[in-house]
Image (cartoon, rainbow, N blue to C red):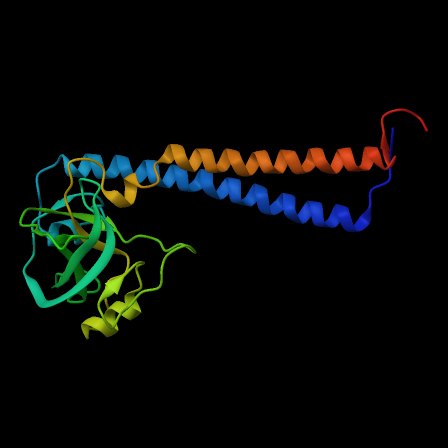
Length: 228
C-alpha cells in the first residue's frame, strides 16, 4: 500500500471533516435537550398549578414545565412575538410584564407573561388560565430582524424588548407561556426525531467527503492498495 496525500487538499478536507462532525454532534446534543424538555413539559403540565414563588424559590430549583397560577400584571405594555398557537396557527403571541417574586434571586425583575394570541387575520384570543414556566427560545441565523419600534419580535432579544417596554433587567432565561393541548410550538416545531435526521445528514456528508477524498487520490495514483 502507498499513500502520497496532497497537502493543501488534505488540510482543507480535515477542516471540513471536523466541521461536519461538530455539526452532527451538536444536533445529537440538541436532540437530547429537546427530548428532555418535552418530557419535563409533559410531567409538569399534568401536575396541579402552583404559584410563581413555589416554582422559583425552592431548594429543588426552577420547576421547568410546571403549570403556574397566573400572576398579576405589572404593565399593560405588550410585546408581539411571532409564532404559532396550540392549534398550529401562525400569528403573534402577545406578552405582557409581571414582576418576579421577591424571594427569587432577581426579584422584582420584569418577567414576560403570555396573555393572548392574534392570528394573521386579526382575531385575538386571550388566555385566562394557568401558564407554563418555559425556557426562552434560542435565536437562529434564519430569524427575521426584530422591529422594536412597532413591538414586533421574531426572535428573543431581551435588550430590544427592554427598550421597547421601558423596563430594565428583563428575565432572559425563562418566561410564562400559554398552555396548549399538546407540546408547545417551540418544542413541537423541531422534534427530537428531526434533530436526529439533521445529525445523520451531517455525518453522511462527512462520510461522503472521506469517500471523495480517497477516490480523488486513487484517480491521481497517489493512493493504492498494492505495491507500486
